[in-house]
Amino acid sequence: MSESREDLRSSSNLSTLTATPELKSTTPELKEGNSPSPQRRKLTRENSKTFHKIRQIESRNNLFVQVELEKKDWKDAKKTLLKRGEIRTGYDIKLLAFLAKRLKLFSQELHSLITDEHIEIAMRYATYGVYELNQTIEEIDALKQTPKPSHFYILISGSVSLMGIPHNTNFLTKLGMKRSVIEGSPTTPLKTPRSNLNSKIMKTYFNGDYFGEVNVCDALLKEGTWRWIANEETEVVKIPYEKYEMTFGKILEKQLQERVDFMRNLIVPIFSGYPDAQLFELCKSINVEFIPSRKVIVTEGKEGDTMYFIKSGECSVIKAMKFTEHQSVGSSKKIDYVRFIELARLKPKEYFGERVLIYDDSFDDNNLDSQRSFQNTVARAVSVYAASETVLFSISRKTFANFINKPALQRFRQFAETYPKEKQIRNMFMKMKRWEEYKMKLISELLLDDEFNNNNNRNNIERGKENSNLIRL
Image 1 (tube, rainbow, N blue to C red):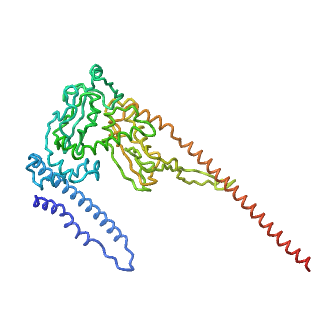
Image 2 (image 1 turned 90 degrees about the vertical axis):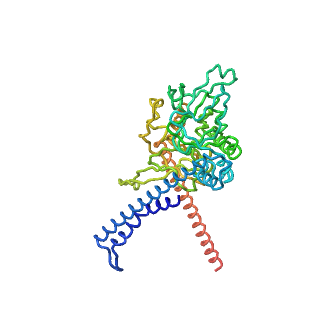
Image 3 (image 1 turned 180 degrees about the vertical axis):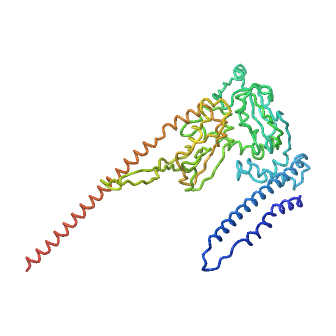
């Protein structure tokens, strides 16, 4: 293994060994006191371009080396996963734990929440599974007494679709349950040969994604029968449920439940009455971002594909507006200037950045039930920066398209219609400016009156002193 790694590293450095001397040999040396000629400037520019190209090649080679090494490590790890947990060596456990920390579950979702010992215990008893196209990985069904999967799954390669069929009304009546209607779901029911069910696809999982949480499965069972089906040849790491619950299961499910509660209790109730199953899967697709104070999050005029929910901290909404005024009273000359106007201060449980998603052409009513394309993007209407240290939950365009149904989209649009238009902002700013000018004028007049009165008092005092002196004389 070490020899192959050294070969890869040596091959990645070939470009640096061959290209760097050429840079040094072609770089013109400038003597002190001599300004560079146009020819030398041209050579310097060409050398800088060559230097940047070499850097790009180096970065690509380094990335290639990392990818190849990771593939080789996982190849060795797969052999380890085929062993029984009792006969795995300490080196095997360390290797599996090291690779597991690179996965999204442990590097982002549970980062700093669990210890290395928990990961090692989970990976000691983890197994390896390969599934072919259309093969069912797991199924949960209340009728078959399978309320939860047998394992917790993490995808290494390939992709998996979560497909299901809703319960009929008679079945729910027997259980004393009500069907929660998934109104206007992102994907319509379809007849698929892969599952032989009149089913709908709720979500597709890719490398690094995971599934099999108890609270998510409980929410799914209220909706119907669900299957996780491989879209292609798929490799997964399977962790037995006992070890999953003993190590990080409760922590992961608690964190997921907190996210669901947060989304349900937004100041604008976008997700009120939202189906539990969809909201759990939506919260699993959330990215957590830690933003330092004074950092710009979105920039006005730039295209975007993400919206944000404020978990903690404050964000300031800024809009740049151009104004034209006469240079002075009675003058025909006009001056143009730009002012940055603070429109709002956003608090926790508020959101921003949704306009680039809800006003996308692919979300029109004619396209809601068809396959959505994301070629037409909308520019940001305002800029937003962090007024303090802020934690954000972000949702990508793809996640938004998969989980936001028609009622939620309508609520987003209805609330967005209440935002002030540019004309209103301009009129408000001009009123505030005239008010500020009036206040400044009033203050200056008061100051002048006070100064005038003080001068009069001084003059009266001096005259009184002069008169008293004359009387004494």
